[in-house]
Amino acid sequence: MNQMTLALILFAIMYAALLKWPQHRWKTALIAAGVFLITGILGITEALGAINYNVLMMLAGTMMTVELFIQSRMPALMSEKLLQITPNVKWAVIALSLLSGLISAFVDNVATVLMVAPVGLAVAKKLKTNPVPVLISIAVSSNLQGAATLVGDTTSILLANYAKMGFNDFFWFLGKPGIAFSVEIGALLTVPVLMILFRKETARVESEVTTKVTDYVPGILLLSTIISLIVASQFPNKPELTNGFLCIGFGVIGMLYEWLRQKSTDVFKSVSSAIDYQTLLLLSGLFMVIQGITNAGVIEAAAELFVKMGNGSVLMMYVLIVAVSVALSAFIDNIPYVATMLPVVNGISALMGIPPYLFDFGLLIGATLGGNITPVGASANIAGIGILQKNGYSVSTKDFMRIGVPFTLVAAIGGAAFNWLIWS
Image (cartoon, rainbow, N blue to C red; front, side, top):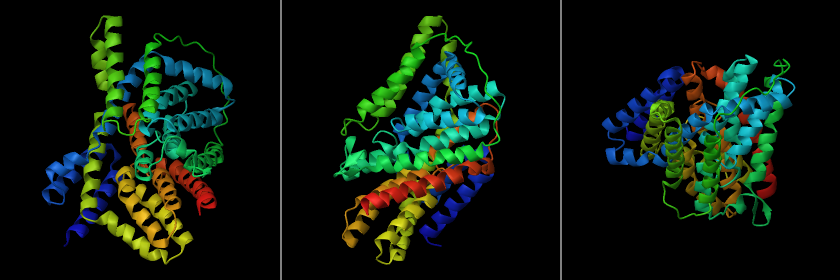
């Protein structure tokens, strides 16, 4: 058995286990990474280097700040304000989804979920409804618009670095509408999907604003985190861990402030326990496994396969890039996938004698939206499910796919079609 076949088998077994036993995902990913190390597909130094420490630090830091944000009672107040302007549960969920989508266009998708999920939980609790579909809708909505701006998602940063695009190029590029328009059109098309999925949730919303916020500083720190990430994105040559240190920094500042304000060390315990260590371990394992299958040539072989299937047709090749990106990113993290595929699709463009932007944007649309099909296809989904599990709710793959699949199909087809009309 050659290395590629072995890697593919191990990868398939791991993802089957991830889908079958969601409560043990972090263990499964780490065990799989260990097997890749034992079999020699992946070296220890290479495995440690494959972990995206910037993403992990952003996660941990944002979790700290969000915990203080929750303790301040601001999410509860926001939920009451939201319920005042929405006629029923259906529109409350749609409003939360649109809010998470808007935020995720400027902030990392995972951070967006961590910010909006507490509001979703508070709304579900107040309405006495199941929070599982509410938080799933928030997670998938945050994935939809991550590719709209340079700062919205790691894949956007990869594209910008490779194509030498600045912040404004995502909106208007070479005299044409940028990828942001394709993403936003796909996102708007998901509103009818939500209306259908939550069509039975017609219970009227009646709420009074009774919550009193105990401290506004955590909210200010959370807003400062968003602004600092946007500002940092304007410096393409910044240190690799800049965003991670910013998120950690604001979390530590908030913790120290609360310690001085409360004159108690209990804040250190509560904030530290709010960090979802299982999610961090799961992502670490996935980063290593993806590096392993990349080393073994699995991703490259998949790319070569659909290049042969394109048969010289630009339209066929475009459809294949989008479709394969959607399919693969449903099961693998889109960050290493996009990093691997960008040079591949640019090579295809060169061979076909066309500018690379049609395929580049199609790749990003497919890879970004495809993660919504399964609960392990995107870091934001993993984070959302982690929050639900932390609050005592179990999430089955079926529960997730009931919302994720129609979201993905509508958004991907709509966004890809508009991108074709502009850049073909």
